[in-house]
Amino acid sequence: MTERAEDLATELAAAHEEYEALEAEIADHGEDDLEALADAHDRATTLLDRYEDRATGTGDFEGFIEFQESFDALVEGLDGDLPRREAFGDANDRFDKRRLSSSDFAAAREALAPVGERVELLDERETRRERYREARRRVLGRQNDLADDIADLERLGALADVDLDAPVGDLRETVEGYNDRIEAAFRRFRGEASAREVLAFVERTEQYPLVPFRPPPDDLREYVETSPVGTESLTQLLDYADYSPSKLGHYVDDPERLRKNVAIHRSYLDGLDATALEIDWPPPPARECRFLLRELVAVVGRFAPDEVVSRLHDLREFARNERYERLRRVATAREELTERDRERIKNGAVEADLESAKREHERLTEALSAHPGP
Image (tube, rainbow, N blue to C red; front, side):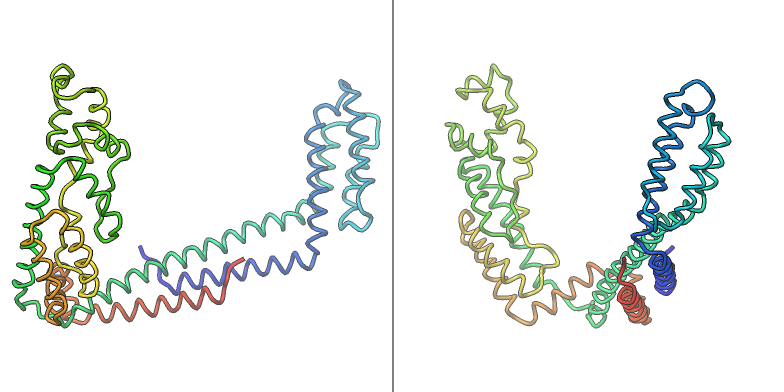
């Protein structure tokens, strides 16, 4: 269940208030004094825990002496202004005898209990600090979710005035006509050009960030550049990779090298198709489309027939016309809007939800500003 912004803001304010209250209490006691007191209490309880079994009864006189001397030295070494210093003296008085029992250690712990309660303020501060941080994290998480919701709702709202019945056939035919032709052209290129040419082409596309081919693996690229079989097609290389070692030996000089550098990259080679050269449907906004088409013309022209490149020029000319963006928005709306989305746009629910999300987002922004975190 999604938490309301108001509830999260209230929890954040409460966590901040609790943390600040404890900070004020620690300041009243003096943080340096509390730190010194916590260190002394820790050393005292460590001695109690370490020596209780050895120093009680009559079995370990050496342990008894070590404990008395260590605890006495601890108390004597405490600053005279240390808060609640007397509690350490009271605990030490329980050990001023010739024989110690478990009850003496219990009494010492009881004498130190008020010190423990005081220094627990430091541990409690860490607990409240983490609670405060967690409250902020929850607010930030909800704020990020709301930002995503706002972006989605604004996208839906932007499609509210789109005429879904407008014909988009001209745009679709231009895009799909190009995609069909580039797929066929690349299939021919892959099947007829040498593997060396194809991989060199793919590698050169790294200069064009909008044409997202995966670069060839280094060992595969180096193999086709240096091996005589690099002059054969990728299709033929993959066929070779399926041959038995004895049969492969009739076609290549080093069968094992081919299997090592080609067979292991079968998934890469099988996936090397025209996808990176195709245009999505719906196509991108006009400005983005023009940048994409400029790169595609430069790349596709390296291997595809002029008729395929001319399709790109046709689409680039189309993208300069305001009609392109109008039809693109229609196509986008048809692809993205569900029946429920259309109904929500129609009855005003999208607009209402957008306003609500913006109010919640603003409320959380205010909460974070008022409670900046420890």
